[in-house]
Image 1 (cartoon, rainbow, N blue to C red):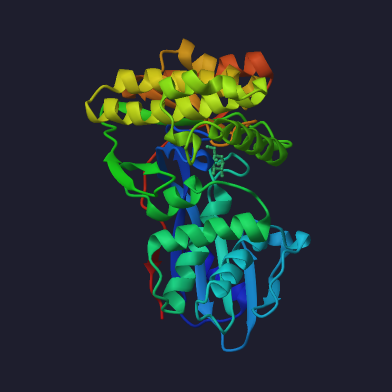
Image 2: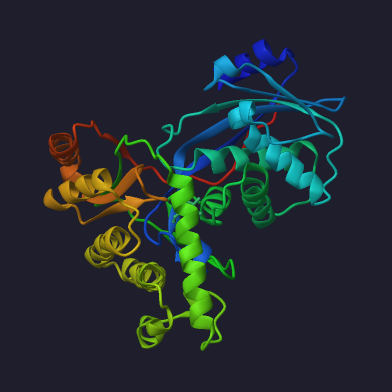
Length: 389
Ligand code: GLA
């Protein structure tokens, strides 16, 4: 915090008191590639995330600095002329959020200075980009005293990613980060946006994130391809069924009508979307009934479906998950978009150290890569943490 304030002073040159803000990263426990299919997800906010120090300016200049990318220096823009610029790199996220808020009619007429610092492992699929978006949204709300509710902030942040940055993501990441609650996961219906915070009792078990440290090459284009295949399957089903999303279907309804989807790949993708949605609802019921083993079993099935039907795992994620299964994890699966990134496992609390050690070793033998492990602490959603002005 002290260093962030110092960076703000050094780089953005003002010693007036600044306001401090925070937005977490997220990890999804179950419900993968269901958000843009109108299904359920079950993510939680992490205790790591993005910190920001911010102050309003009198002119129309925006100045952005990140302690994580010091070589890029201070990135400047004018509030009346905000465009996606490739060289601006990470700064396109805050710029996008500011632009989308303005387009939505929020009264932001003067510029601002913001310094950022993030401690989410880079490129690990724990949503560092949505974290920057939401911290920016909270900054805008607070320093311009906007009357905007948290769900609206979530939607505007997603819109910034879709329209300004050009990544066609669903709403899960922004929602988990905007609406997270300490020691709870969120069961979210991504179609209606109805949600429920569910307590996660970690007295007997630990949630362990393991990073494959595999670069997520081509992930965006493959992500978009999966979305298109699901849309194709939905249109085929809509010839006969009056459904609005794949999330509307039960497993039995899908099985009865799947022949309508001619393309076999699209049929497999849709199967995952339908089954994963139902699995997520069932998993949360099990958790609420205290059946952690049952929840873990469904996590394992989720991974198998992502591996075999959705085909977004790859050899590193599979190796890491299989090692976790072999070392007695209650449940283990890939988390996030896939094609690299992280796994999430439930592990008996007393076994955590041995688990990390043995799984790490097996993974290295299989892939030649070192995995990183983190014990999850479930934190709160995006918020102001200190008011200086
Ligand atoms: C990425 C996207 C999310 C979601 C997941 C897969 O994290 O940003 O919207 O689709 O992939 O569940």
